Image 1 (cartoon, rainbow, N blue to C red):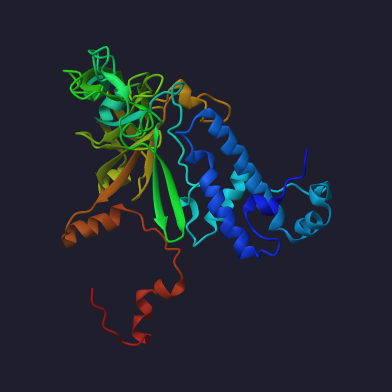
Image 2 (cartoon, rainbow, N blue to C red):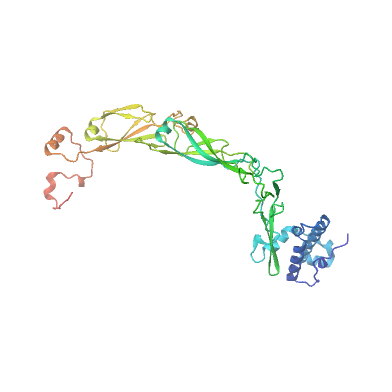
Length: 401
């Protein structure tokens, strides 16, 4: 094949500088770029595509000093063995995106991606809160809940129209799924290719006047769904109850995702609270109880009465542990709890004690208490454990309580 004259292709002289080469390249590349010839016949499209490649090749060679020198000396044969330049489209994008910091807004490098194909995916999951009392979570119950759900219109089957000819090519993008906006900025022309705002890239739209009478062309309807939800025993905050296939219908997705209820526990009317898998209750006792022991009953969350009997001395902040009377633990959660290689089926009930003191005592009762209660030696440091007989030798200082 005869050697191509790159200077002739770009329409420049052999003395053309870099600025002139770039100016000529831009003008010709804009003219013959394939995206500018969508309305031409196939023969013209093919010819313009070849012309575009030649223009890009010529500019790649003549804009590179080494390649240009060898080309001037030996023609195209002198370029053999030298590295290939970028593809014509990459070169086009690089040249225009480097101008004026305009980046992706320049013609040839601004095509937005179409919406992804979700036909084999489930629609996004839907989350809902489900509040319940600690008593109900401890026992495990079944509750009923009603929620609205977006569904495909059953009259038009999600098409938005029931008319046989109710769907046509989008009038905005003419069925191409994208729009082209061309602007002239001085000597430059910019082109922005975007997903069609009217059809969202679907290429089709509902013919005006053919909208479905039920959904008004929206393709969706909202219906109230009633759910019976089984709450396992021992459920806690943030536990998830999953109902398969009950998320909203979204056009383009292959099937429904899931409806997920997230539990939110409230104390309700009980005086217990949950700490992990344990249940905790605070019990007020008198000074007599703390010294002589306690014997009382606790009404549990399932209405059982648990007797608590302890004859030892109870100090402020002490706790008693009733094993196995905390929150039930499901088999699923048991896998995550390890303790001495034993299966733990439930947490514990923790009873925390708070001492109540009398507001005042007369001297007679004080003397009786001093006689009955043995004197406990203090283990405090010497400077806060000074005996009364040493008072006179101390410096006098008034202490107010």
